[in-house]
Structure formats: C-alpha cells, structure tokens
Image 1: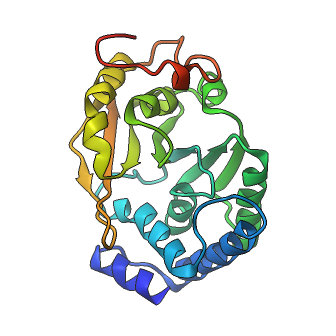
Image 2: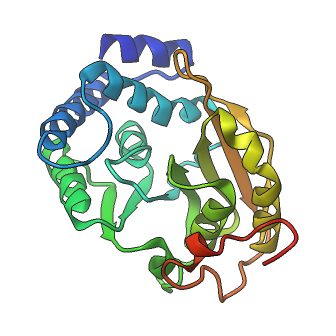
Image 3: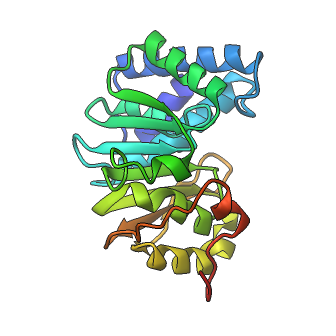
Amino acid sequence: MDELRRALQEAGIETEEDTLQKLNAYQRLLLEWNGKMDLTSVSQADTAARHFLDSLLPLAVPGLFPENGKIIDVGSGAGFPGLPIAIARGDLAVTLLEAQGKRCQFLEAVCREVGLKNVSVLNERAEVAGRSESHREAYDRAVARAVAPLNLLCEYLLPFVKVGGAALCWKGPGAAQEMEDGEAAATFLGGQIGESLDMGVQDRRHILIPIQKIEKTLPQYPRKNGIPAKRPLKSGKK
C-alpha cells in the first residue's frame, strides 16, 4: 500500500491512514475470494494496487464527483471503480450494480468487513434497473470500468443519470475507435461526450470519457435484456 499511497500523493490525492487500511482489507478479501471464484484477473497484491489506482485517479479532477453525490457503478464486478471510490469518499452514496449473485455476495462481504455505510449492492441487470422508478435518472454520476464498448455503455449508463449529471467511462487506449458510434449513441440518449481525460496508470494509458446528461433519455431505453448488446446503437441508425 506504500506504493499506492505515493502514487496517489503524486496525483494530488491525499489519503488518510484509515482509508489505506480499508483498501488493504479490501485487497486481502479480493485475493482470498478470487482463489475460490472467478471475480477478476487480479492475482497478486501489486496488480490489485494498480486497479485501486486506476479507480481513484479521477478523484484528483476538481468537481468530477460532487460532494454528497449519488453514484452508481454499473457492472461493478469485483468492485472497480465503485468500491475504492466509496472508501476514499465517505460523503458519496454509492450503489454497486452487478448482475451475478456470487459477485454481489463478495461485494457485500467487503462492505461488512470494511464497515462501509455509504454503499448498497444491487443484484440486477442494467437493462432492468435502468427502467426502475427508484433508479432511473436518480444519480449524479453513473460509472463503469472495462464493461463494454462506448456506444453500449451509453445505453447502460445514461438512463441512470439525472439531467445535469454525467456518466464516466473508464477506457483503454483503443477508445478512439469507439468514439463515432459512442457519440451518436450519447446524443440519441440525451448525452454529450466531453473531452477525454488522460488517466495514465504506470505503464498503461487509460482515459476517462465523461458524458454529460443534457436532456432526459427516451423512456423506451434501455431496451430489454440482452438487446443492447445484440443490436448496439450505431452512427447512422438506431
């Protein structure tokens, strides 16, 4: 965790000792559970620390996460990026949305072990939760890391975001190839893609793509289970 602390400090993110202890407990559980079930590709502590860093670096951007905001992490998996953000920012109310029940059990175990009071775990598909009155356009930020191509992320994320909020997409260096279809999908669903933010992590180039929510998403989106992935929105057609 010393390396993670130094990397965060270099990025301008000060972390309290309590935060690092909670991240360490999360890391320990992640490695334990990963030996029993397919949670993530993380297999050792230094790899886990890189995932923590990747999740937390956006906190250095002023105003990216509003104080006391509501956040939903769509397709949370092993908890990235939502859990590290919730640990570092106790003022945020974070919902971890995950379709696989076993992964939800892991996320709940971490919350109990670490004592997180600002996190809730929702075992549901994005297509279903995005149509629910209690979740639709109810969040300041919807986030996703390594979940899907950008145009598909737009349909998964934007229905959760209130007008004036934003979706935040963690992407790798190949994101430029997804931009044309992503921009078309974002516009159709009430969003507007902003300038990408460079979030380089060690020797890897990662970027964060913000999508501002400028008007309500059409009520028929997201489409029913599985349809967005089978027929993703593309430039020139819906």
